Length: 199
Image (tube, rainbow, N blue to C red):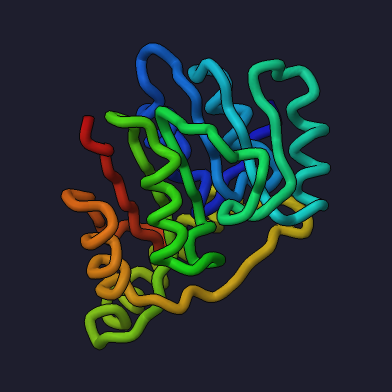
């Protein structure tokens, strides 16, 4: 496994801890180069990685050639026919939700989860309120220092986009789609959203 560290992979250990003890079926939305898929496959029964970027999918397929319980699919989460009729015990989504329409994506995640299944999102939010800017400002220097010390890197051609919703907006919209979800502002300019679908 060729590993690297950045503001997204910093949360991989938490996502691995969310895999059910029995393994189960896992979907990673916005899988990129497949690094998280490879890690999830060490604990899950089956993992599907999904990404709309052909370059990322090609990298993921090369990475996962010797991981028989993992596959990657080229396509958009909201329209991929390969996901028709499928449901999952865990859905992960790292730095990807802000690339999609928020309400529609959360609704689809809800629909794709099995009863009792877990949703784990690591996301980015836009700074819109004074508090948003204060928190981000306080974190700039320590994050830059720690990122340099840890040797932050990614994979070539990583797709990036600016988030459009604030954390307050994400909290409000997610509350209506995922009752009881937990949203936390986190370090590395990220937030986490976790939810278990009722049985």
